[in-house]
Length: 364
Image 1 (cartoon, rainbow, N blue to C red):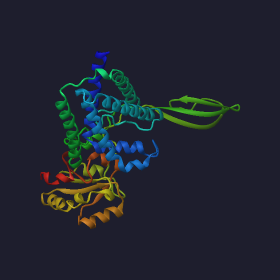
Image 2: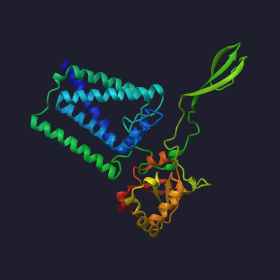
Image 3: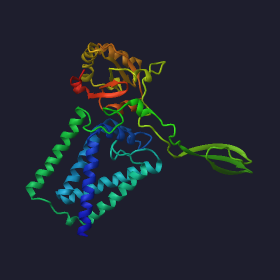
């Protein structure tokens, strides 16, 4: 039993630390995932959506700290009970997502590793088994160091986690796992190879045959059956190739300008997924950014999911002249974890990307 507890202790501790640090590297991204869970279509607790960021930081800090606590043997009973509570909750969440096909990616490892809902559930079941071993063998979870050293390490893990979470919120993720990282080319990320696999669908045809309901399954062809057609449903049974970037666009009210701007040299793009929620301190820096960009021969545009009224109000309020174009809100939240955030593009390649707090670090 002692050997099993030791193995479980190492596996669970390391996995919780890695998973927590990946999410702590991008707490905004994890908060977007929580908002998806809280929505009416999933758990139907939308009143928690405004608190998603606070909850995401607390959850991932606790996740990292518990992993450290377990490895060093700090307060074993509290640690194991807390781990058990967390994994029971996460196992329920991933099962719910998988069974009801509500959330396609649980966000367990952020953008670093994408897991299907059933893969996430399987991972949580394995972790639940390992934590149950720790629960029944908690007496074998002994402190790794002396009382003072363990207390200091535990406190340092908590302080570091809070500092790291705050740091990436005030700047940008330390490691960017997304398709819009510096050096990536947006056009290349949007391309679909000619030989890319296509999605496979099944169609469920419902007929009334001699007064009885009958369902015929096909891959798309209309079934050869005598009877009265009632309805048809379909389901994707095998996903086809999906490019890493599939929802990015630059559009005016009546024109798609994506290709035009992705072929521009020296382009500064100000990204604000919502002008209604833009950080006022960040918006106040846009006038100076605009003037500096134009002075150095750069063209500057904005991207937002907000409407014309919001665009006009922002331009008037902050005395900026560049135009804002339309893009999907989810895509803009993925492009940069800042509102506003700033990118430099050169023929679609991301040369620089900064949080509004770091706008002075842009090199022209």
